[in-house]
Image 1 (tube, rainbow, N blue to C red):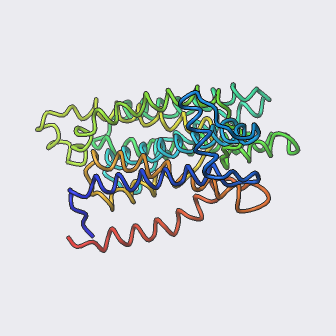
Image 2 (image 1 turned 120 degrees about the vertical axis):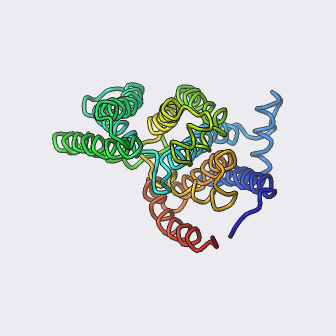
Image 3 (image 1 turned 90 degrees about the horizontal axis):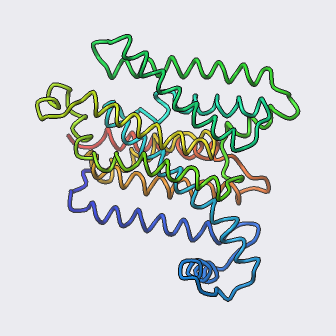
Length: 340
Protein backbone atom coordinates (compact mmCIF):
# COMPACT_ATOMS: atom_id res chain seq x y z
CA UNK A 1 0.00 0.00 0.00
CA UNK A 2 1.68 3.19 -1.23
CA UNK A 3 0.11 6.46 -0.10
CA UNK A 4 0.41 9.30 -2.66
CA UNK A 5 2.07 12.52 -1.54
CA UNK A 6 -1.10 14.54 -2.15
CA UNK A 7 -2.87 12.64 0.61
CA UNK A 8 -0.58 13.93 3.36
CA UNK A 9 -2.83 16.91 4.31
CA UNK A 10 -5.82 14.57 4.46
CA UNK A 11 -4.02 12.09 6.72
CA UNK A 12 -2.77 14.90 8.96
CA UNK A 13 -6.28 16.35 9.19
CA UNK A 14 -7.65 12.88 9.99
CA UNK A 15 -5.04 12.42 12.73
CA UNK A 16 -5.96 15.80 14.22
CA UNK A 17 -9.64 14.83 14.09
CA UNK A 18 -8.84 11.58 15.92
CA UNK A 19 -6.92 13.52 18.56
CA UNK A 20 -9.81 15.96 19.10
CA UNK A 21 -12.25 13.07 19.37
CA UNK A 22 -9.97 11.42 21.93
CA UNK A 23 -9.91 14.67 23.94
CA UNK A 24 -13.72 14.89 23.89
CA UNK A 25 -14.11 11.27 25.02
CA UNK A 26 -11.46 11.54 27.73
CA UNK A 27 -12.95 14.73 29.15
CA UNK A 28 -16.44 13.23 29.37
CA UNK A 29 -16.02 9.65 30.58
CA UNK A 30 -14.98 8.41 34.00
CA UNK A 31 -16.37 7.82 37.48
CA UNK A 32 -17.98 11.27 37.21
CA UNK A 33 -19.46 11.48 33.68
CA UNK A 34 -19.64 14.92 32.08
CA UNK A 35 -21.88 15.68 29.12
CA UNK A 36 -20.13 16.74 25.91
CA UNK A 37 -22.02 20.05 25.88
CA UNK A 38 -20.80 20.85 29.40
CA UNK A 39 -17.23 20.02 28.43
CA UNK A 40 -17.47 22.44 25.50
CA UNK A 41 -19.00 25.16 27.71
CA UNK A 42 -16.28 24.83 30.36
CA UNK A 43 -13.42 24.83 27.83
CA UNK A 44 -14.89 27.75 25.88
CA UNK A 45 -15.39 29.75 29.07
CA UNK A 46 -11.81 28.99 30.11
CA UNK A 47 -10.51 30.27 26.78
CA UNK A 48 -12.68 33.39 26.61
CA UNK A 49 -12.89 34.22 30.31
CA UNK A 50 -16.67 33.98 30.35
CA UNK A 51 -19.14 32.09 32.53
CA UNK A 52 -19.62 28.39 31.69
CA UNK A 53 -23.04 28.27 33.36
CA UNK A 54 -22.41 24.78 34.73
CA UNK A 55 -22.15 23.30 38.22
CA UNK A 56 -18.92 24.07 40.05
CA UNK A 57 -18.06 20.37 40.48
CA UNK A 58 -18.35 19.86 36.70
CA UNK A 59 -16.01 22.78 36.10
CA UNK A 60 -13.54 21.44 38.67
CA UNK A 61 -13.53 17.97 37.14
CA UNK A 62 -12.91 19.26 33.62
CA UNK A 63 -10.29 21.89 34.40
CA UNK A 64 -8.53 20.65 37.53
CA UNK A 65 -8.78 16.85 37.37
CA UNK A 66 -9.06 15.75 33.74
CA UNK A 67 -7.61 18.82 32.06
CA UNK A 68 -4.01 18.43 33.29
CA UNK A 69 -4.20 14.67 32.73
CA UNK A 70 -5.38 15.08 29.13
CA UNK A 71 -2.66 17.64 28.38
CA UNK A 72 -0.03 15.39 29.96
CA UNK A 73 -1.12 12.33 27.97
CA UNK A 74 -1.16 14.29 24.72
CA UNK A 75 2.26 15.81 25.40
CA UNK A 76 3.95 12.59 26.50
CA UNK A 77 2.47 10.61 23.60
CA UNK A 78 3.57 13.24 21.08
CA UNK A 79 7.03 13.46 22.66
CA UNK A 80 7.67 9.70 22.64
CA UNK A 81 6.33 9.27 19.09
CA UNK A 82 8.39 12.21 17.77
CA UNK A 83 11.54 10.95 19.45
CA UNK A 84 10.91 7.47 18.06
CA UNK A 85 10.44 8.83 14.54
CA UNK A 86 13.68 10.83 14.79
CA UNK A 87 15.69 7.89 16.14
CA UNK A 88 14.32 5.46 13.55
CA UNK A 89 15.26 7.83 10.75
CA UNK A 90 18.69 8.60 12.17
CA UNK A 91 19.65 4.98 12.87
CA UNK A 92 17.97 3.76 9.65
CA UNK A 93 16.29 1.07 11.71
CA UNK A 94 12.50 0.73 12.12
CA UNK A 95 12.96 -1.28 15.32
CA UNK A 96 14.54 1.62 17.21
CA UNK A 97 12.59 3.25 20.05
CA UNK A 98 13.28 6.33 22.24
CA UNK A 99 15.05 4.24 24.88
CA UNK A 100 17.69 2.94 22.42
CA UNK A 101 20.38 5.16 24.00
CA UNK A 102 19.42 4.28 27.57
CA UNK A 103 17.18 7.32 28.12
CA UNK A 104 14.35 5.41 29.79
CA UNK A 105 16.78 3.41 31.92
CA UNK A 106 18.52 6.58 33.10
CA UNK A 107 15.20 8.29 33.88
CA UNK A 108 13.99 5.21 35.74
CA UNK A 109 17.16 4.91 37.83
CA UNK A 110 16.99 8.59 38.74
CA UNK A 111 13.37 8.30 39.86
CA UNK A 112 13.98 5.05 41.72
CA UNK A 113 16.87 6.68 43.57
CA UNK A 114 14.61 9.52 44.62
CA UNK A 115 11.94 7.10 45.82
CA UNK A 116 14.56 5.07 47.68
CA UNK A 117 15.62 8.15 49.65
CA UNK A 118 11.98 9.23 50.22
CA UNK A 119 12.42 12.54 48.38
CA UNK A 120 9.45 14.76 47.41
CA UNK A 121 7.81 14.26 44.03
CA UNK A 122 9.48 17.34 42.50
CA UNK A 123 12.91 15.98 43.42
CA UNK A 124 12.00 12.55 42.02
CA UNK A 125 11.00 14.12 38.72
CA UNK A 126 14.15 16.22 38.67
CA UNK A 127 16.34 13.17 39.31
CA UNK A 128 14.47 11.27 36.60
CA UNK A 129 15.14 14.00 34.06
CA UNK A 130 18.79 14.27 35.12
CA UNK A 131 19.18 10.48 34.91
CA UNK A 132 17.98 10.44 31.29
CA UNK A 133 20.43 13.17 30.31
CA UNK A 134 23.23 11.44 32.20
CA UNK A 135 22.57 8.13 30.41
CA UNK A 136 22.77 9.69 26.95
CA UNK A 137 25.80 11.77 27.93
CA UNK A 138 27.54 8.57 29.01
CA UNK A 139 26.61 6.88 25.73
CA UNK A 140 27.97 9.80 23.70
CA UNK A 141 31.17 9.95 25.75
CA UNK A 142 31.84 6.22 25.38
CA UNK A 143 30.97 6.37 21.68
CA UNK A 144 33.44 9.23 21.14
CA UNK A 145 36.13 7.35 23.08
CA UNK A 146 35.63 4.08 21.19
CA UNK A 147 35.52 5.76 17.76
CA UNK A 148 34.24 2.78 15.83
CA UNK A 149 34.18 2.72 12.05
CA UNK A 150 30.37 2.71 12.10
CA UNK A 151 29.28 5.52 14.44
CA UNK A 152 25.62 4.50 14.33
CA UNK A 153 26.35 0.90 15.28
CA UNK A 154 28.73 2.09 18.00
CA UNK A 155 26.04 4.31 19.53
CA UNK A 156 23.42 1.55 19.41
CA UNK A 157 25.66 -1.03 21.05
CA UNK A 158 26.83 1.48 23.65
CA UNK A 159 23.21 2.39 24.37
CA UNK A 160 22.34 -1.27 24.93
CA UNK A 161 25.27 -1.70 27.33
CA UNK A 162 24.52 1.51 29.27
CA UNK A 163 20.82 0.59 29.41
CA UNK A 164 21.76 -2.77 30.91
CA UNK A 165 23.99 -1.04 33.45
CA UNK A 166 21.17 1.26 34.56
CA UNK A 167 18.81 -1.72 34.59
CA UNK A 168 21.15 -3.43 37.04
CA UNK A 169 21.07 -0.31 39.20
CA UNK A 170 17.26 -0.39 39.20
CA UNK A 171 17.26 -4.08 40.15
CA UNK A 172 19.64 -3.38 43.05
CA UNK A 173 17.48 -0.49 44.27
CA UNK A 174 14.39 -2.70 44.21
CA UNK A 175 16.29 -5.38 46.14
CA UNK A 176 17.29 -3.03 48.98
CA UNK A 177 13.99 -1.06 49.02
CA UNK A 178 11.48 -1.37 51.84
CA UNK A 179 9.07 -4.07 50.56
CA UNK A 180 6.06 -2.45 52.24
CA UNK A 181 6.42 1.19 51.20
CA UNK A 182 9.24 1.89 48.76
CA UNK A 183 9.04 -1.21 46.56
CA UNK A 184 5.35 -0.75 45.62
CA UNK A 185 6.04 2.91 44.82
CA UNK A 186 9.02 1.96 42.64
CA UNK A 187 7.01 -0.70 40.80
CA UNK A 188 4.08 1.68 40.30
CA UNK A 189 6.36 4.40 38.88
CA UNK A 190 8.14 2.00 36.52
CA UNK A 191 4.78 0.97 35.03
CA UNK A 192 3.89 4.61 34.34
CA UNK A 193 0.83 6.63 35.32
CA UNK A 194 -0.88 9.96 34.66
CA UNK A 195 -2.99 9.85 37.82
CA UNK A 196 -0.75 12.13 39.85
CA UNK A 197 -0.07 14.79 37.19
CA UNK A 198 -0.54 18.33 38.49
CA UNK A 199 -0.51 21.70 36.70
CA UNK A 200 2.95 22.43 38.14
CA UNK A 201 4.25 19.24 36.53
CA UNK A 202 3.02 20.49 33.16
CA UNK A 203 4.64 23.88 33.76
CA UNK A 204 7.94 22.04 34.25
CA UNK A 205 7.68 19.48 31.44
CA UNK A 206 5.90 21.24 28.56
CA UNK A 207 8.59 23.90 27.95
CA UNK A 208 11.26 21.18 27.88
CA UNK A 209 9.24 19.09 25.43
CA UNK A 210 8.71 22.16 23.25
CA UNK A 211 12.40 23.11 23.33
CA UNK A 212 13.32 19.59 22.22
CA UNK A 213 10.60 19.40 19.57
CA UNK A 214 11.45 22.69 17.82
CA UNK A 215 14.87 21.56 16.46
CA UNK A 216 13.27 18.40 15.04
CA UNK A 217 10.78 20.58 13.16
CA UNK A 218 13.34 23.12 11.97
CA UNK A 219 15.77 20.43 10.79
CA UNK A 220 13.15 18.06 9.37
CA UNK A 221 14.45 18.31 5.79
CA UNK A 222 18.07 17.71 6.82
CA UNK A 223 17.06 14.87 9.12
CA UNK A 224 15.42 13.23 6.12
CA UNK A 225 18.87 12.98 4.47
CA UNK A 226 20.21 10.87 7.34
CA UNK A 227 18.34 7.92 5.85
CA UNK A 228 21.02 8.01 3.12
CA UNK A 229 24.52 6.55 3.59
CA UNK A 230 26.86 8.98 5.36
CA UNK A 231 28.97 9.61 2.24
CA UNK A 232 25.93 10.63 0.22
CA UNK A 233 24.61 12.85 3.00
CA UNK A 234 28.00 14.59 3.29
CA UNK A 235 28.10 15.08 -0.46
CA UNK A 236 24.82 17.00 -0.16
CA UNK A 237 26.42 19.37 2.35
CA UNK A 238 25.20 17.80 5.60
CA UNK A 239 27.48 17.72 8.64
CA UNK A 240 26.34 14.25 9.71
CA UNK A 241 28.10 14.22 13.07
CA UNK A 242 26.72 17.56 14.26
CA UNK A 243 23.24 16.78 12.96
CA UNK A 244 23.18 13.44 14.79
CA UNK A 245 24.28 15.16 17.98
CA UNK A 246 21.49 17.76 17.73
CA UNK A 247 18.90 15.03 17.07
CA UNK A 248 20.09 12.96 20.02
CA UNK A 249 20.00 15.97 22.36
CA UNK A 250 16.54 17.05 21.17
CA UNK A 251 15.02 13.55 21.26
CA UNK A 252 16.57 12.90 24.68
CA UNK A 253 15.14 16.16 26.01
CA UNK A 254 11.55 15.40 24.98
CA UNK A 255 11.79 11.77 26.11
CA UNK A 256 13.29 12.61 29.50
CA UNK A 257 10.71 15.33 30.16
CA UNK A 258 7.87 12.95 29.28
CA UNK A 259 9.19 10.05 31.33
CA UNK A 260 9.87 12.34 34.30
CA UNK A 261 6.17 13.18 34.74
CA UNK A 262 4.55 9.92 33.58
CA UNK A 263 7.05 7.14 34.24
CA UNK A 264 8.32 4.57 31.76
CA UNK A 265 5.73 3.86 29.04
CA UNK A 266 6.83 1.60 26.21
CA UNK A 267 5.67 0.88 22.65
CA UNK A 268 4.45 4.40 21.82
CA UNK A 269 7.74 5.50 20.28
CA UNK A 270 8.06 2.21 18.39
CA UNK A 271 4.57 1.56 17.03
CA UNK A 272 3.25 5.06 16.24
CA UNK A 273 6.07 6.11 13.84
CA UNK A 274 5.51 2.83 11.98
CA UNK A 275 1.84 3.68 11.55
CA UNK A 276 2.67 7.23 10.43
CA UNK A 277 5.23 5.96 7.92
CA UNK A 278 2.74 3.47 6.52
CA UNK A 279 0.19 6.27 6.03
CA UNK A 280 2.30 9.10 4.59
CA UNK A 281 5.51 7.48 3.38
CA UNK A 282 9.07 7.59 4.67
CA UNK A 283 9.79 11.33 4.28
CA UNK A 284 10.59 12.62 7.75
CA UNK A 285 8.99 16.03 7.14
CA UNK A 286 5.65 14.22 6.82
CA UNK A 287 6.26 11.46 9.36
CA UNK A 288 7.10 13.86 12.22
CA UNK A 289 3.81 15.82 12.46
CA UNK A 290 1.64 12.76 11.86
CA UNK A 291 3.62 10.78 14.45
CA UNK A 292 3.26 13.58 17.02
CA UNK A 293 -0.51 13.88 16.54
CA UNK A 294 -1.14 10.13 16.41
CA UNK A 295 1.13 9.59 19.42
CA UNK A 296 -0.83 12.09 21.49
CA UNK A 297 -4.16 10.58 20.44
CA UNK A 298 -2.96 7.03 21.09
CA UNK A 299 -1.59 7.86 24.53
CA UNK A 300 -4.76 9.71 25.49
CA UNK A 301 -7.00 6.82 24.40
CA UNK A 302 -4.80 4.38 26.34
CA UNK A 303 -5.00 6.53 29.47
CA UNK A 304 -8.78 6.77 29.10
CA UNK A 305 -8.98 2.98 28.90
CA UNK A 306 -6.71 2.64 31.93
CA UNK A 307 -9.02 4.63 34.19
CA UNK A 308 -12.37 3.33 32.87
CA UNK A 309 -11.91 -0.32 31.89
CA UNK A 310 -11.75 -1.63 35.48
CA UNK A 311 -12.55 -0.56 39.03
CA UNK A 312 -8.86 -0.12 39.75
CA UNK A 313 -6.85 2.09 37.42
CA UNK A 314 -4.44 0.13 35.23
CA UNK A 315 -0.90 1.29 34.39
CA UNK A 316 -0.58 2.67 30.83
CA UNK A 317 2.47 0.49 30.21
CA UNK A 318 0.29 -2.62 30.48
CA UNK A 319 -2.27 -1.36 27.94
CA UNK A 320 0.36 -0.07 25.49
CA UNK A 321 2.03 -3.49 25.54
CA UNK A 322 -1.27 -5.34 25.07
CA UNK A 323 -2.33 -3.05 22.23
CA UNK A 324 1.11 -2.37 20.81
CA UNK A 325 2.17 -5.97 20.29
CA UNK A 326 -0.59 -7.05 17.87
CA UNK A 327 -0.66 -3.63 16.19
CA UNK A 328 3.09 -3.76 15.62
CA UNK A 329 2.81 -7.25 14.12
CA UNK A 330 0.07 -6.04 11.73
CA UNK A 331 2.06 -2.94 10.77
CA UNK A 332 5.18 -5.01 10.24
CA UNK A 333 3.31 -7.43 7.99
CA UNK A 334 1.77 -4.56 6.03
CA UNK A 335 5.16 -2.91 5.61
CA UNK A 336 6.94 -5.98 4.27
CA UNK A 337 4.05 -6.94 1.99
CA UNK A 338 4.06 -3.61 0.22
CA UNK A 339 4.99 -3.83 -3.49
CA UNK A 340 8.54 -2.76 -4.24
